[in-house]
Length: 249
Image 1 (cartoon, rainbow, N blue to C red):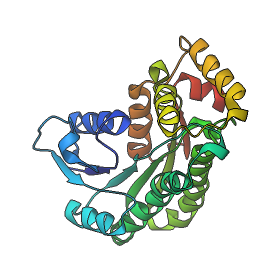
Image 2: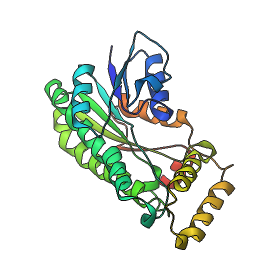
Image 3: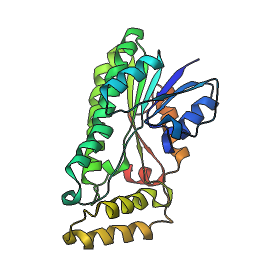
């Protein structure tokens, strides 16, 4: 029985990916910062471990507790929507610590066992925002663009060891969930400078107008991750979701 380790499984894409792999007969090590908040069904093929990808000690402990794995999906991530001048410095660092450096450190932690077995797959979940520049997403997009470049270089570096590295680029979530969360964050922080009110309103009005357009469903991302893990000849980059595919085309 093969084993998959996934980060960021408390909800969303990570949780649905865990469910799918379990249904396909895989053993899954699902990780999250607060395991008590997870909603995955009990299963003999499921283990839930605490993991904070911004903490090297937590990473090392989780990888050791997970034992031998066949694939790693770096899915944990956070976002913030707002103009650069309005994003607190500590939030900029947290976004990169989670989205970029967390992905790198998790990858580094599993590489020794993959090299030893001359097999293994690393799938990094990025974002379709890296395919087309958008206002109010400078830090989030930069953190994910770094993941893209990292994965492309890594794929060349580890291929001689029989290891594959792949990218999945989801589009926007249904019902503009990212936008709704961003409104809450921006409102709570009170950090949007007055000078950006016009462009902020225009962006959110555009998101509202596009609410009925094709978006990325969790099943789209799960299917892309499944292909990346199980199909050796899968492309290095996979857009996931109708909107992401349109951008990629």
